[in-house]
Length: 322
Image (cartoon, rainbow, N blue to C red; front, side, top):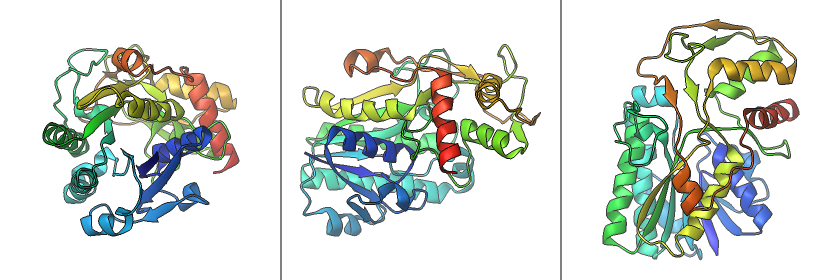
């Protein structure tokens, strides 16, 4: 089988590609390198193309023997999605629509979609189950939910089997230390805290008045390699489970911003210089996944289910590469 991996030069996509390489599974990468890195696809089969252009998809991919699609490509900065609504819609929704239509035309039956816990909005209960109401509060979450609904409709009308994976907070880096999180600008918590510690720069904690023990918000962090394994398990799941399916990918454990800072300080033996800034509007106090459905139905097992393991891998990448 040959798996088409979109966004394979990005953070999560590149780790999935590494996972496929270790399993000796054939793949081909598509990326426009708007946020991905060419160094992550060096010596790999890839096409540089824009999924917003359906003709470009057909011309480049029509003759390939693709058996499944794993779709990571898209824009993912929540604050940008509010300011760049049209660009986010085109890159996240329109591009996904074009790719899904190509899958239907080519009779590619398996489609795995990189969704997000952002589809839930402000949670009514913790941990969050897949049947929790979906009421996204930002354009990024709205984009993800719109694509989920599009794929659900297509799966009911055509022979297209879909798994949507709702990530919580992807974090960490590959054990080899040469592949990790590298955004520009960097917006994710753990790499920013590490950068502050290593570069003696100031880190801003966005508020300390949340309804948690230490006043900082709590998030569910999941190692990027555990995310990668879930995508391959999802493809296997579709062998015997047709139609449309949704799964949470989280650890069922939450850590506060201050707990992350303290763990970084302990592992680096360096003080993190931080200040408390203003609380972000609409930021939930706590986001923690219920992952029992993924564990039971996908047979998914977390290999790095500790904050220490996640942060240690990120530190290794930052020291080796950045």
